[in-house]
Image (tube, rainbow, N blue to C red; front, side):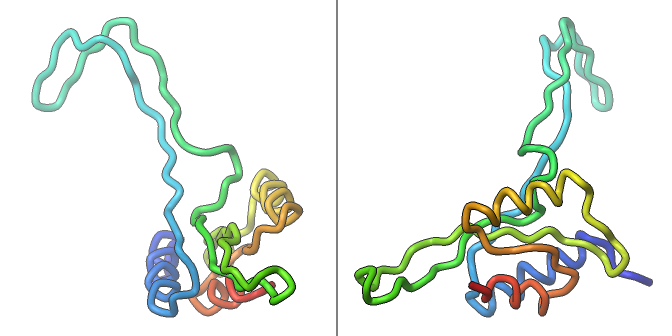
Length: 130
């Protein structure tokens, strides 16, 4: 049985934490309905004036995001700073969407590190690049 993106994502999160290679958060998105509750039962909810509510991040935003501490050179006072990091999780055959590719380009243009990870090893390699 092949792994799905969720399984790979969990393995990556564990590996990154164990290696202390960065701090990552899962990007959750969703859609629901909001309105005034008219009637509620165990498995049914009736709303008046319902409206669709989409939550989350922009289209193409990576599955995992966070930061990696980076030591600045002595010329820059030697302080540690956080560098934005992102990982798009894909299966062995998975391909990024056009929106994801555009988001990756946008983030990297501004100095973020990251990319597509299909395994914990790939994720750690991406987070250690600079």
